[in-house]
Length: 244
Image (cartoon, rainbow, N blue to C red):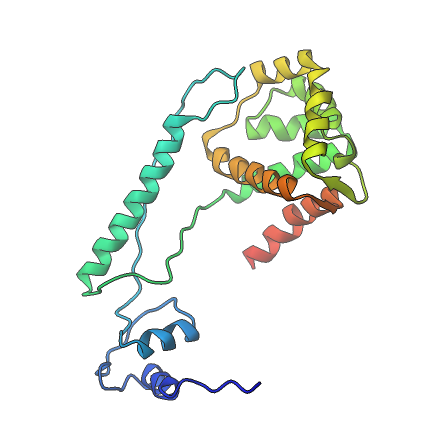
């Protein structure tokens, strides 16, 4: 089937490329829009005014909670919402200053410390190799656990993950999650030890929440893969590719 371009597409592209046009009037602008987005914008009668940004920078702080229960850290959640709301509000203010009626192509970005990714990768590699000393150094530098609790952490992780921590394709679904829960129930002393001595620094809350939500979604729909290999490639190759 032949697809005909919109009759005004060529004119819109010429206007963008040359700065000439009925409405453009030779004005230059900065933009993060794709060519398709810019053309569609012109087709409906609007002109790009410029690139607008908004930032929200907060110190998350510390909130103490009952670690024996599965509870939301409400104070930290509200800080994240406030930072996002401030960033959007400042972006809207910036848009108004340049005479814009609205914002399109919105992107929200959260920056993750590269050094912490490298340390987390080292911890993962040590877990795969069952290298207690290397694992202890990594989690200590991350501020997750004291070095003398690393052996317990490895044992609990290996017990809870079961086949998911091994090589080769494994099914991740609701049954796998329930089986992991049942195995961990049989090791309450190790879990209590990690809860009492472990800590998740504020800068790791957002990544940890994202990873948990991702695997929770996968478990709900069910999927089979070599999870250990996928995670290793994501930590090693995914970060490198994004950085380039």
